[in-house]
Length: 173
Image (cartoon, rainbow, N blue to C red; front, top):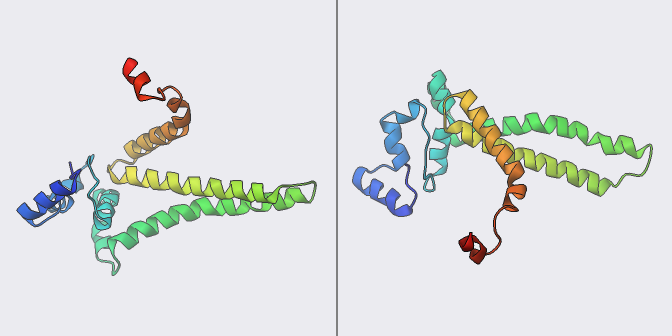
């Protein structure tokens, strides 16, 4: 539990001089698989520390800490590298409307709007997967949980239809 409220984070800072995540990091609790709950009070730096769990497990974290860049920069570089891997095939897809336009009518605005939406959705899903990966050292567990969360996200609109729309209907059961 890393502090759900600002009051909990402040209490930990008053008692120890460290935030909850810094306190756990000092005791090397992030060097083993950890599932963190109540992460509302995390700073950018602490999120970066959690994202580095795989490096801690592989013992490449010391190399990353020795770099003359901040941990936030390393995490952003990892994210942008994954976005680049997504962006290359999406860039190739941008030629499809142009090619199809040679043989018929193409709504370029809707075609490129759809490609942009696909790219942005991919960026969001990459961020979700990277966050889940930061919660565990095991790549297999991270992959399985990520696929489960992404599937749940995909099915969310269908699941929302199963819920009652009003508070009274919810209470009536």
